Amino acid sequence: MSETREKTSIELEFEDIDSKNLWAVVYQRIRTVSNAYDYTLDDAKRSENRHLNRYRDVIPYDHSRIALKRCSNDYINANLVEIEQANRKYILTQGPLPNTIAHFWVMVWEQNCKAIVMLNKIIEKNQLKCSQYWPTSSSSDLEFPDVNLSVHLDSEVNHSYFITRNIRVTDKESSKERHVILFHYTTWPDFGVPQSPTALLRFIRAVRKSGALDENMGPPIVHCSAGIGRSGTFILVDCVLKLISDGEINNVSVQEILLEMRHYRMGLIQTPDQLRFSYQAIIEGIHTDWETDDESALPPCSTPVEDSKPTNGMIESASSSDDEPPPLPPPRNASLPPFKPLPSLPSLPVTPTEEDKEVLRPSSPESDVQSDSSLINGNGSTAGVTNNNPRKRKTEEKAERIAEKVKQIKKKQSEAEDKKKKSLERWAFAMKLLTNPYSIVGLLALGGGLYYYALSVTHAHGARSATTL
Image (cartoon, rainbow, N blue to C red):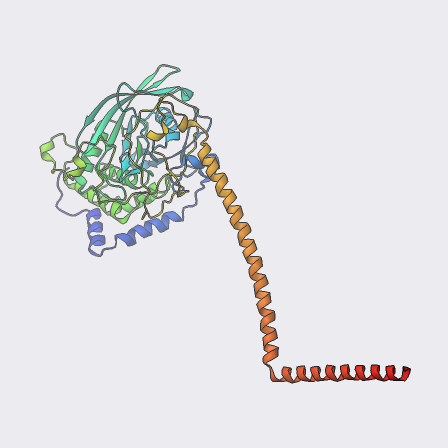
């Protein structure tokens, strides 16, 4: 795009908010408006689906959720986001759990997706953010016999700040094959933003040039860990730039587009900084020819040195300070029968930490006690993934027993406190009587009367005895 002389409405809005430091206020307004949306969440809250959600508070609306056909349970934590004026559709989803990997690939197949956009690493700050859902090499396919799918890695190319993986998905029943590109952005911290918009714009350019965003293709699947923060930022920037390229440069409202997106999936864009970065990326997209094939015409990427280390997109550098780790996933159950071995993951400790996350909290503080690699036993089976999780059942039963004991203890404590209170009240009443002057006189009079009566009775008895003698 050619550089414009006059500032656009988006730039003027950005400068106004920035100069007054109102990003938190603007973001809170967006949250307030979208929190008033009255959409049901019934399917996500069903008992049989709760273990399929990575985070308790990030679940799909019923009206826009993706429904699976090949599985006995049609549920997956994913929403179709449609922005009609931009002719854009995206599927936003959480990072797959060990027991939802097959569901994820069923969604890829059934929705005819050409691309997957992954915006997180598998492990970030020793926190497991997403399961390894693609083959690690061309010699270790993923097999899902219960849904008749297999997944093969054809090739992998590292572009320093993102990785592209060419994947072949095969329907075992019909022998049909489809090619899917996994675009894996590896330099975006959770709850944070990249150091500059340039690398993200180049990443969006690569996704666009693959044809994955074309109208005649199935919607791309976009995910991070929860599928709302980084994922929301990505689709907002792409969608607004699409509207601008269609000639709507002064007729598009970034905030209104975000509010429209939030009608389809809750909580898109998680922080004021992510909203501010979205504006920055859009403004840079307006003033640079960012879609050109001429790399020399693009501004240089300011990728952090530590993020450029070859980690294959699996593990984030522990020294990164740009983000706070999210909460651990909730305990998981299997939802599909056993499938062939998953490729093993690098064995790293998953250390729970205190989180400073705005809205997301796991359903259990004991969650994610096992990494994906520990779920695969020594002989390569995936029994740990596909069982009904007896450890979870025992934990839940133990929790119920403890809760019942606590209830009984509280009841006994309450009864004891009531008895103690009544005893104290009686004692206080007695002390009040004893310290009252009138009470003392009355007691003395009563005591004297009783003493006189006793003497009288004794004297009368003695007189009768003498008469008898």
